[in-house]
Length: 305
Image (cartoon, rainbow, N blue to C red; front, side, top):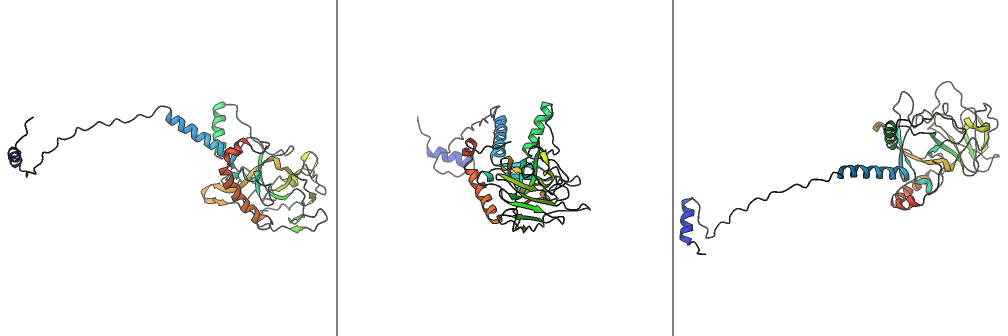
């Protein structure tokens, strides 16, 4: 192929008003049409399914949200008709590392005889699915009798209360000495007098629980009678019907997640000697549990659900 003389190229460049550079201009490259890859039809449903699976795993093994429907924990947890029911997050790993401590706010399955108001799953499958999703995110109360109270005494401790609302705990048995709890978190409005109860030694593996709303909580004091009934006479109290098995505990409430105006953590009151130990154990258990989730998915302590 014959080359074009430089003089000819220079003449052409001069005619077009451009200076001759001594090099030929490269032809413009043809624009390549970029084709956008179309996402497969299953990508979006797959992501939704993955998100649901992750949420179920987290709910089952690590953290579960709960809706507070009753007034028994006022004003620590809102559940009254005139308030917005709190949504709390429950640490489900902590009690795989230790047993509940006095002062913990625990969520648990009600023992037999604790006939609290309960909700049943609807028969309509669509409504049941929607309700299940609401329970998954903590905006719908769980089916069955799931309660929330504060642990006051654990196995081996003795607890009693007087007519002025003071609660006393002994680690040496029913003969004492007793230590009176300082409980600024309690709520006792209205004319109803505090309910006194006789000394009860909590059996091993069980918990004495009370609501912070001491005038409106069907807690351990209320179930002192035979078959966990309210005998109306608290001069004696059945230590088994009035207490909750540790195996029934679902987890420890550690934060109010909703509404945003009430965001805060739920620590252990200073009146309980295990406060510092509980706080450090909670953090360690939560972090360690997140790392060991696959292990707990296979090997987890059996609990009644």
